[in-house]
Length: 435
Ligand code: SDX
Image: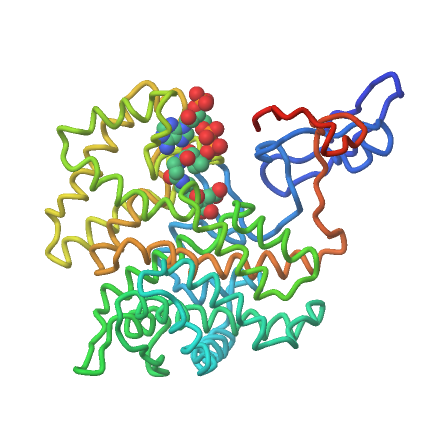
C-alpha cells in the first residue's frame, strides 16, 4: 500500500489517487486538480509527467535497463530478429513458428508501393534530405489508403500495421536512390526484411548485387535496438497526433518529422558531422571544453539522455557490434571509430560529464556502423525511422484501444498582455516598440 497523497490549499484538500505500476515508479492521478483546485501543474519537458499507461516497453534509467514486453534488450538483440521483435511489440507475446511465418509472409508480400509514388519522388529537388522525402512519402500514404481511417476496427489496425512496416523500407530506399540519382529498385520476395532494404538501396540495373549477410544481420540487430523506447519525443508525437483520430499514416509522418531533430533521432547523423569536425584526438579537449561552456551552444552529440542516467544499454550492445562489424569489413582502424573511443573515454572521465551523468547514448556509435556499412550520414535517421516505426505503430494501437484515451490537449501558464482596448492606426505611436 502507498502513502496517501493530497494537495492542500485555501480551496481545501484534494486527495490525489495513486496509480500503481507493475514495475518502476507509480503516479499521482492529477486529472481532478484543475476542477478541484483551479490550478495547473507545470512540467514543460514532461520529465516528471506520465502521459499514459503502457505495457509495451520498460526503461529503468538509473540502472540502464530496457525491456520490450518484459524481454531484456540484449537478449533480444542476440537471439531474435527484427520482424519477430516487431510481432512481440505489436501483439505482446513472442510468436509461434506459424504466427511468425504468417507475419513475415504478409510483410514481404506488401513491400511494393503504388507506382505513382515514383513520380512523387521525382518531384523533389536532387539534394532534398532523405528525411524530408520520407516524411512526405509516408504522409502521402494517407491519400492512397483513405479506408484506414476506421481506426477502432482491430482488423483495419492490423492491415495498417503490416502495410506501413512493409512499405517503409521501400519508401526509404526510393528516398535514398533519389538522393544519389540512381533508378529505384523494386523489392524482392526471396529476401528477408533487412536484406531487401540493402538490395533496394544498393542494387543497380547494370549488374547483379549480392547482399552481404553480415551487413544484413548487423542492420537487423540495429533495428531491434531502435524499435521502441517508451514515450520518447517522436512516439509521444504519434500518440498526440493520433489522439485526434487522424489517419494513422499522417500520425506516423508526424513522428518521422519529430525524430529528424538533432536532439532526438537526428543525433546519429550529427555525431558523424561532429567527429569529422573534431578531426583528430588533438582537438578533443577543445570540443569537450566547448560542450561544457554555457555560452557555447555546442553539445557533445550522442551523449546524454533524458531518462538514462547510466550507460544506455543499447550503446553497450552497439559498441561491441561496432568492433565486430569493422573487423569483418576490414575497417578496424576506422579513424572515426578510434576518435569516438578516445572521445568517449575522455568525456566519461571528465567531472562535468560525471556529475551531470552524461553517458554515450544509442546514437553515439550507430552512425559509425551505418557509415562502415556503406550508408551516407543523411540516411542514418531514415534507418532509425524504419526501426522505430514498429514502436510508433504499437503505441498508436495501444492508444486508440485504451478506454482512458482522450484527445491530447495540454494547458499553459499565460504570461502575455492583459486585456487592453484596440487603438486605431492613426492614433498609434509612430515609434512602435521593437519586437
Ligand atoms: C535519442 O527519449 C528517448 O528515449 C530518445 C531516444 C530514443 O530511443 O527514442 O533514446 C533516442 O534521442 C537519444 C538522444 C540523442 N540526442 C543527442 O545525443 C543530442 C545530445 N544530447 C542532448 O542534447 C541531451 O542530452 C538530450 C536532448 C538527449 C537530453 O536533454 P535533457 O534531458 O533535456 O537534458 P538537458 O538538456 O536539460 O541537460 C541537462 C544538463 C544541462 O546542463 P545544465 O543546464 O544542468 O547546467 O546536461 C547538459 C545540459 O547543458 N547536457 C550536455 C549534453 N546533454 C546534456 N552538455 C554537453 N553535451 C551534451 N550532449
